[in-house]
Amino acid sequence: MAPTLRSKLPNVGTTIFTVMSQLAHDHHALNLAQGFPNFAPSEQLLEYAAEAMHNGMNQYAPMTGLKPLRERIADKHNRLYGASYNADTDVTVTPGGTAALFAAIAAVVQQGDEVLIFEPCYDSYIPTIELCGGRAVSSALQFPAYSVDWDDVRSKLSPRTRLIILNTPHNPSGRVWKQEDMLTLQELTRDTGILILSDEVYEHVIFDGAPHQSVARYPELAARSFVVASFGKTFHVTGWKVGYCLAPAPLMAEFRKVHQFMTFCTNTPAQYAFSRMLENTALYENLGAFYQRKRDTFRSLLQGSRFELLPCEGSYFQLVRYDKITKEQDTTLAVRLTKETGVASIPVSVFYTQHTDNHVLRLCFAKTDDTLEQAAKRLCTL
Ligand code: PMP
Image 1 (cartoon, rainbow, N blue to C red):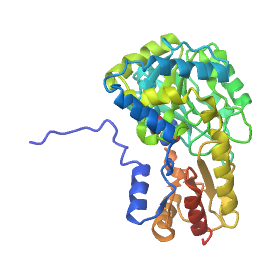
Image 2 (image 1 turned 90 degrees about the vertical axis):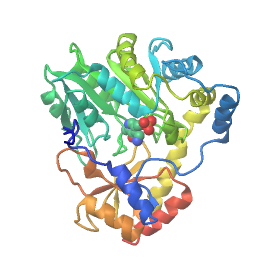
Image 3 (image 1 turned 90 degrees about the horizontal axis):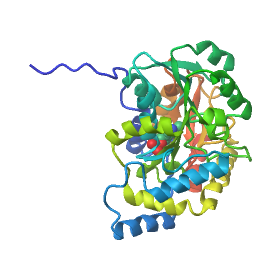
Image 4 (image 1 turned 180 degrees about the vertical axis):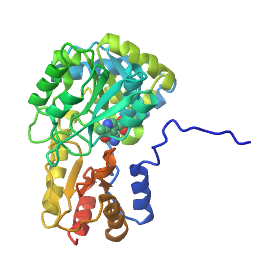
């Protein structure tokens, strides 16, 4: 008799990113769906990685990450946000931001705990919470600004709330949290045992001079927070899957207990390469300007279309509302656009657990100018 298997994640299927990328491939469409750059990373980064491999850095790295890399990570966050992270006790390098999110959630969420999340949200949060026996409690961001409804948040916190997960700059909306948001979060969590997981993978992809509101800027929040970052986003190498987590020592000690049995350590030559890249602070400090130019180019190319462009304050995603073009469901339109117009996008309803279709698609502008021009030309025909 075949063994019976009871799924631990009965509601999870193939992710929309895989589905849309496959559809884009099958129909030779321009892939503005999945969030990854279609241009090359810097030669310097590749040279550093090759240098590490040729110099024998091919075996396991320390469980917590290469020390020079951890030092530069701590220095960066301490310098930019006035934090006081210790490279030895408060920083761990992970195989991507996703692994860091998983380890942080698994380290603190226990059976029956509630985790407050903001929807629309990145797709890994809820399945990870559920695998750990927790329950996701969702607060919807207010359409179309995608601002936090703090009264709703207040009403949803309970003695069972163990963790709040936030993400700024935000995927998929491009919304950036403001100082008032952070101060409200600080006030709401004061004198509680609630922990915070702050997904800051787009920290350097932020526009128009806005400061990145890291929880690390606020000592009270930093004391109860895990911060997650990703080198894939910062250095245009999403396929290298290297990220990291910062947290005060007691939280980081628990994080490391999980991390060491998920993967133990992270790719050694890549860590060496990133530690060298962080020596040049201009590389990440100029990233906002680089993507701001792409955002502006893409938005101006779409001015001639019938899409309504929602604001984009950070991340590399532009949301477009298509009410004036069609009343189709966003999932239907995304498939049709890929097949008939040759542009793949992500329907924003997939980032919600409850059916919420505001007729909005997400387009990734981390693409060459040529790709953006061709995509915009096709979208302007609708
Ligand atoms: N969080 C958010 C909001 C993201 O958009 C992504 C990448 N798409 C990640 C985390 C994961 O980063 P990584 O690719 O380094 O695992």
